[in-house]
Length: 340
View 1 (cartoon, rainbow, N blue to C red):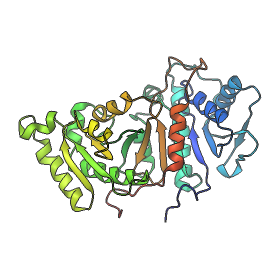
View 2: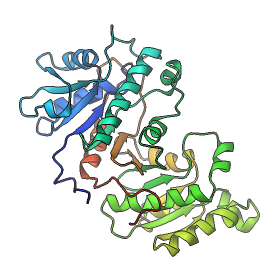
View 3: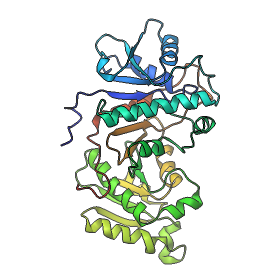
View 4: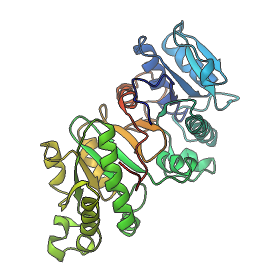
């Protein structure tokens, strides 16, 4: 039986993100802005975190810990578990292999701790895909790293804010590849995880709207056959499993209907179809939740912001929203096909 968030005393881990971006700064700012909510540890490079924290508050201190069990949360010191050891501070606002390796090491260390049960979940600060590639790590993003290192889990990305929740059938790939990958198994994974993810957010019987792939959801086959051949059968299968799924709905109106509370979560077919509506409504309140993992993972809905890194003006609001969401969640959600 999964413990509820309120009963689970294990800390959350917050990864520092790419050290050349705003990740370390927003992590440090969240720590300083929330003195009453510090039951969490940073996974990252102690030198980087010490430097950033001192720039914001010279009196603030970092405690290096070897395990989450060594952390203390009652003395105003930031607990940092070292996942890397930079020889010098990475160049701020620039892509580098060193930054990519450090960001990846923080993610991998946090995943292992979550799999071992040492932490309750992970909140990840932003990483840069080009820095990962410069380090020889060819991952499109966090989601793919998490899926691989969590035992090859079939996962889905949920983006959520106060108005709408969106789960993606396909994530980081070209539009041509997205059409190919949006097959029946991918539809079922997304629909099942949309229901499970909405339940984890406290919705007892989620209404799941599935967007079409083509304009006007194919217009009865005039604009494409994927709706009739793939998406509608997946919706029928989901309904036979007791999921309140409907559609396929035209992608140009389904998000408006979700905002008007006709639906609780929308299954979008590809990255921009689902993320543009969420991000248009503002980044500060958007949260990325990875569904299908055996542990909690959330992240802010923005990137590394190299253009403002190191200037001391980064806003931690989206990270704080992601952290608060992780605190509320009662996942890990069931894997696709598991009993609800």
